[in-house]
Length: 267
Image 1 (cartoon, rainbow, N blue to C red):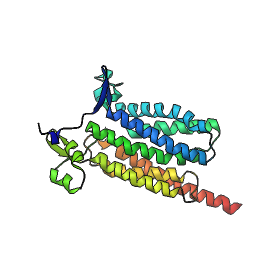
Image 2: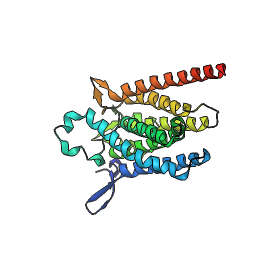
Image 3: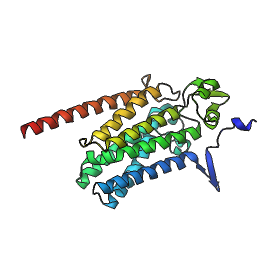
Image 4: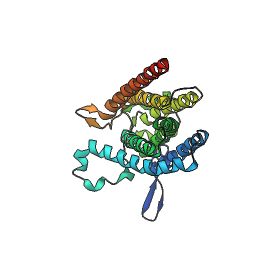
């Protein structure tokens, strides 16, 4: 076999009979990096050191569970026949929209119980969420999943990407769109936008809403290239959810702007 075309082993190393996969390592790194970025901002905003830790103790596991539940629901035709595979999350099969929904609800409830502004906390967390998504897509790369349709080797070479990425996109002798890369790069741009917006005197919640709009817009188009989309009534689930989230975020953004102007006018 040509070594240049060998795929990267998704297993980083093994401890006895336990395989430690790159997917899990990369996801863990994304969570840790996001934590340090958010914790730094939390301190600047006057939150105690334990606030974010307490929040993540609840949010991270619930988000992962919801990401898996979301995926299983839309792949129920398979999992209903293979129930033993439902818990095998280490083989892939989580959906970021499920994580965002479950995680978002958890953060909201946590903030309500602590008596702090959900919008302020959401603004602080938004860049860290993108950091997790940026790195997380490279876990898909290691697993050779979440890719797009077939393309030529020449097409990939014209993208000016490294050979090791091109080689990993060769699956069974066929080259595929590196949609993981498209989304990762889109999210990097989004992260830069959010970090720049922190320097602007925006209203609470607007950085988070910008994140939702940015991510949803990009995901809608990138999802159209993928070949492994979850489906609902023949439509790509991620595209529908992205479109709904984008519209809601825009409406909420405009509504809160108008409402706040009216309040100031009355004052």
